[in-house]
Length: 92
Length: 516
Ligand code: SF4
Ligand code: SF4
Ligand code: SF4
Image (cartoon, rainbow over all chains, first blue to last red; front, side):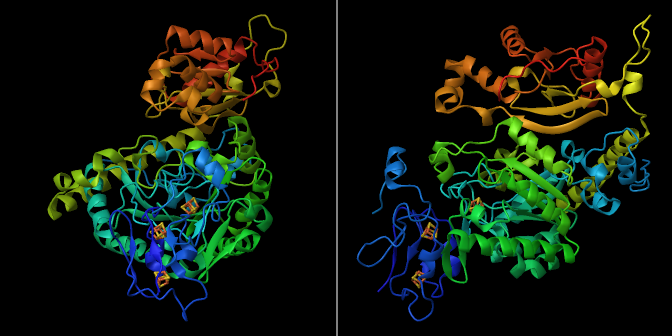
């Protein structure tokens, strides 16, 4: 059980500092969660910390690949608008 | 070298309020104690920003809130915040950079941390940088800009690092308005959305402000003017933060364009016109000193305000720029000498301003044979005059000016009211495109953009101007004038106002102004 960071990540460092498991590492091209260390914050916090502070939609997914912060959920900018402006490129 | 002692001039505050006829510049209105603290601070002092340099280091990438004018992916035009893609420094790299820069720009007085995220959302990196700097360059003033969410939590740590200036961005006091500016905050291990999150942010900002004041730390408040969202509300913000002891309130225009990818940019939120911004700054100025020369500079800016030298000091050039410890010690001594000289100059300027008698009586010689010897100056209207400035003089070619300083001349004298960047008022990609190519293809629209930025001004002073822009400016009701090239700005503006008064143009109402 672990969350995963996608290519949408902008390497902003916010998640690293709040992860109680020190499971996130700086890496290129984007930060990564060490699967063996991440426990999805279970038993420690109600919400996974990385996904609660991450400002970038679609940057964090669960083990099924579902976005914890789907497009539009953080900025309120509708997905259609993001696509119109070429700002939505999906994530791996 | 003889240095006048600072702080022994007559109290300017008393002078300004007793109406001695001399317009008080921003810092003249401040108390002596505060002025002593800010007089060599380029961001706080209207005078000092022409002479002293500041530098920001980008050591703080993370943020703990979202603002609708910010997109964490790109350079943020509103806060002093380059995007996370810009050169991020570790605390060690930041120290190396600061020392190298301060050795080469002896006017350096201020080192700030403003981002690219929120310094207090990166406490370890931020405070490590401050700690090392206070040890290695103790002459530099340290400052910090924050959204305020974690201020109460870190206020003691801030006090410990001897940071004497903190800037808090406060856009509202009302959580309902806040909900239209901040979609969420990260607080107590949760993402909290809407008015509930905004309420917490507002409470923390206000509490943080009070705690800083209680510890004797200077607080400046920044507000982003968002038309239709917080424009009228900012007057209340201004009153409240002043009552709590903030010494400056800086109202900045929202910068929103679709290509920034921000919520406001993509939802068509309008940026304020120059006239709207000035109306608000004027409304708030009655309440407290306003900082009109603020350039909304980037979190990695280097140098004098308005001239960013950041590209000379990127990390890849740093190895070549680094000096020995001995050189750093020498550099520090040199800074001291340069600072003392500039402070002496500034003190002389201030003293001269207070010694000069009321400006206008002498300004208006009665026309010969006139039955009314002096024109009742009170009936003269004020005029906005734009200046293409360089180093405090009318020194820039009109076509090269990236920004204009705006002065208001009136019977009370000359008052700096703000600056307008030409690029900020472009009406989108169609007219200004992406830089040079478009400029060459459509020189016409660049000029139109500049003319729009100068809306409301009746004269523009510059060192030189081409034939074509001259004609277009005139047609737009803005009189170009290059007769005062290289003269000090205040004197040039006053001279032009005097000419306008003498020719009778000021007794008439202003020519109808093109809407900004
Ligand atoms: S879910 Fe929790 S433990 Fe896993 S990476 Fe995110 S913050 Fe760390
Ligand atoms: S908070 Fe999100 S965008 Fe920032 S580094 Fe972590 S995953 Fe990437
Ligand atoms: S506080 Fe600054 S960095 Fe954070 S979201 Fe707002 S503008 Fe962006």
